[in-house]
Amino acid sequence: MLKHDNFFTQLTQIEPSEIKGAFVSFLFIFLLMASYMIMKPVRDALPSDWGDVSLAQQWTYTFIVSTIAVAIYNVFASRISLRKIVPGVFVFFAISFLGIYSAYRAGVEVTFLGKVFYVWSSVFSLFHISVFWSFISQHYNKSESKRVFGFINTGASAGAICGPLLIILLAKSMSVDNILLVTSVVLISTLPLIAILNRHFDKKETEGQRAVTLSSNPFTGFQELLTHKRLLGIALFIFLFTGISAFLYSTQKELLIEYSRVERKQLLGSVELATNILTIIIGIFATNRIARKFGMATTLSLVPFIVGLLLLLLSANPAIMLVLALQVTRRAGNYAITRPAREILFTAVDREARFKTKPFIDVAVYRGGDVFWIWLIAFLGDGWLDLGLAPLLWVAAAVAVAWGIVGLYLGRKHDADEQDKEV
Image 1 (cartoon, one colour):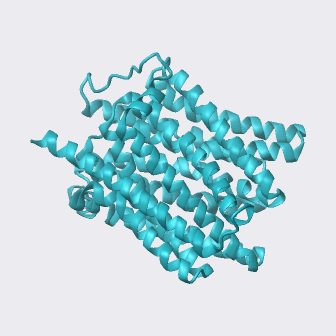
Image 2 (cartoon, one colour; image 1 turned 45 degrees about the horizontal axis):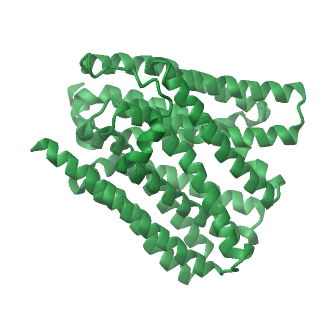
C-alpha cells in the first residue's frame, strides 16, 4: 500500500494523509457532475424549438430565479447547521426533479414545462457545484488546496464524460422524463459520501475548526460581497469570464450555420470529449504544479491571457475549426486550472463568505453576466451597431485581457497574504 501511496503522491503531489479525502471528494463531484450531464442533452435540445427572443427571455428568467434561489438558500443557511444544509440542498434538488417528472406524467402542457425545466436545470447546473466547493474548501488551508483541488476537480470532467455515456447506453430503454428519475437517484447517492467526508475531516480538525454556526442574519453574505475587496474581485473575475463564454458561444453559433444538425452535433460532441480528456490530464499532472511553482497570480491569469491572444489571432481568420479549438483551450484551461485556482481563493475567507457569498457569486453573478453579455453582443451585432465578426472578437480579446488583469490582482493578493502568514 505504501508503494502505491508513494506513486500516487509523486504523480499528483498529494500527501498520503490527504489521499482518502481527495478520492472521496473526487467521487462526490463526479456524481454531482454526472447528475447534471445526464439531463443536459435534454435541456440543450429545447432551445431549438424557440426563437431568439424566447431564448433571451429564458436566460433572463434563469438569472432572476437564480438570485431568488440564492437568497432563500442564505435564509436557510442562517438557521440550519452546515451538516444539514449541504445534504439538504441535494435532497431538495432531487425532490424538485421528481416534481417535474410527476408533472410530465400528469400531462402538464409540454412547452411550458420544458421552459420551467430549462430554467431550473440551469440554476442547478451552477448551484450544486458551488455548494460542493463551499463544503470542501472549509476543510483545506491554502497549501493543502494547491495540492488537492486540481485532482478533485478532475472528478467533474470524469462525471461529464460518464453521465452522457450512461444515457447513450440506456437510450433505447429510457424515455426523456425517466432521465429525471436517474438524476434524482444519482443526487441522493451523494449523501453517504458527505457523511464519510464529515467523519474524515472531523478526525483531522480541532473542535474550534469544526464550528458550524453561521450568522443568523441572511444578508451577511451579500454585505460581505459589498465590503470585501477580494470577494468583489472574484465576482468581477467570474463576470468577465462569462463575457468570454458569451462571445465564443455567439461566434460558434454564427459559424455553425453552414453545417447540418448532424454535423453540428458531431463537432460539438468532439469538443466536449476533447475538453474533458484534456481537463483530466492537466488536472492530474499540471494544475497543482503550476499553482505551487508559479504562484496564484500566474495560475489565475494564464488562461485569460492565452485566450485573449488566441482571440486576436482568430479575428484574422474566423474559421470554425479554430473557434472549436479555442473553445477546447478555454474550457479545459478553465476547468483544469482557473476553476481550481478560483476555489483556492475561498480558503482565505471565513465560513460566512464560503456558504453565503460564494453561492451568490457562483450562481447569481454568473447568470447575471450571461444576461448582460448576451444582450450586449446583440446590441453590438445585428441589434444596433451591426459590427462584423472580427470587431466583435477584438472586443472579446479586450474582455479577456481585463479578465487576466483581475486574475493577476487576485493572485498577487492571495500570494502576499500567504507569505505574510509564513513570516
